[in-house]
Image 1 (cartoon, rainbow, N blue to C red):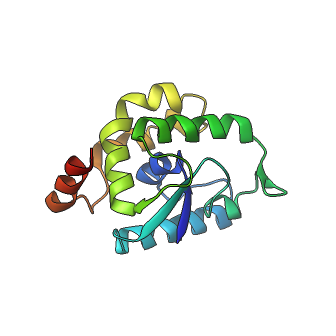
Image 2 (tube, helix red, strand yellow):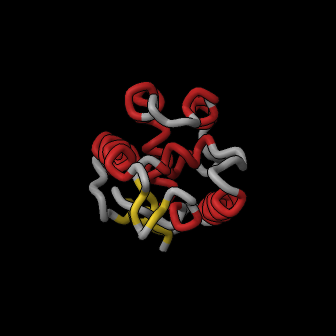
Length: 144
């Protein structure tokens, strides 16, 4: 099972191969590819370091250098999605729900992120991830 911080549901939409280090970018690309290849794969949503953070140079002793700020972003995203930390859900469900709810919230949640001004996440959320089939969207509507 892949573990993801709440705010990484937004980051993965806009990810374009860049990152805090080459190892971080490779890890994030691998996780994104895995989730795109297996959209029904169950993920665990967190408000703490996850599988993407494992290769981040800002992870020190199992804790993010900016943990308080990052955790606020996680909780804001998860709160808007009505998915508490520790919840498990199919990847497509969480990502599609994030896409539907998060675009208007980027300015509020992500304004302090160094990647925000590049516009990648906004573009990615507008475009969406390729696994949002009509059947999957119907399931999301039914789960509301």
